[in-house]
Image (cartoon, rainbow, N blue to C red):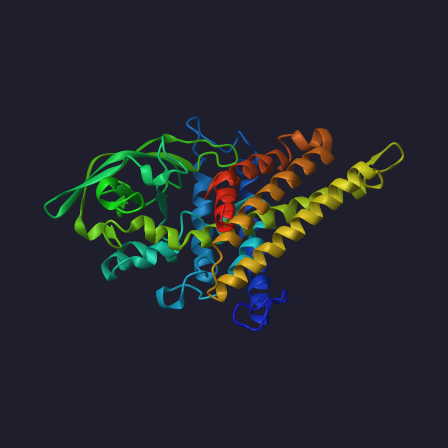
Length: 404
């Protein structure tokens, strides 16, 4: 599916995208899978790979960093950013397809081949020259990592009502507040912290919010937010009279919420691609098991209750992928895709949830065993229905786009 042609929608991937996907898969086979094999159960077992406080053991953390750096060197990690800032400059269609490809290998170190919340996101392109050299460039190279500090203990979907504040004091800003469920917070070199700098009464609901670059020795990690499927990867960020210079403001003062919203569709396209890729992985696992496992003298795939689950999973995955490709294509044509990406995020994560549940059911007792990854997928699917806008937020957005 070409990301450059404006003549119409084609679901045929162009030659450049095909080469990127082939190279990406080779990279995973040659560079990532050997690391996963070395880690063994430290990576795959839900209890053996974590410390008492919930942090992944150091060999896992080191392997994740290694994958990021190698992927950046190979040109995959920041392929979604423009070439002008050191990215790959690929189309949204190619980026969607590459993310889907990476996640179609299941859960593991392959998830870190393409940049996630810890990596270079378009919001960081608002950095000035000094900020770019200090913060953004090392993230693009996989040498540093970051986090998106918006969610708070009492504020999730209603993020403009955040209680974190920043007050000007001479040439500095004093930040106070708590952030929660911040992906990569325990390992980030810096966090993009959103704080209210002008009251809503003066700036309006969405105005008056500023983004600051806060370094890891300036905030306190309050603890690990061990969401199932994301164990040890999220944390609470405590900001207690944190002083940062004016030079750490990312973008314009009071404009951060508007800046973040400009890139909202990209985040939902990313989540959709992840969900589709993981659904494809589970579908293959369920199909293989159904053709090998025997019961009552037949392959279980011969039974309609099993074959119908696989057929339904295939239909949901196929439909979600079609929505994802259309969304990416519209974004490449600079067309409004707010409704489209909300449909994708809602439908693809719902599909992943249903496919994961069916895969567990098809595998029976093996499906709920710690020795297999299927319950981990069910947990992660539930997480994806909350992050980047809950199911309900997506449906509200779709309804509003329909004039309701």
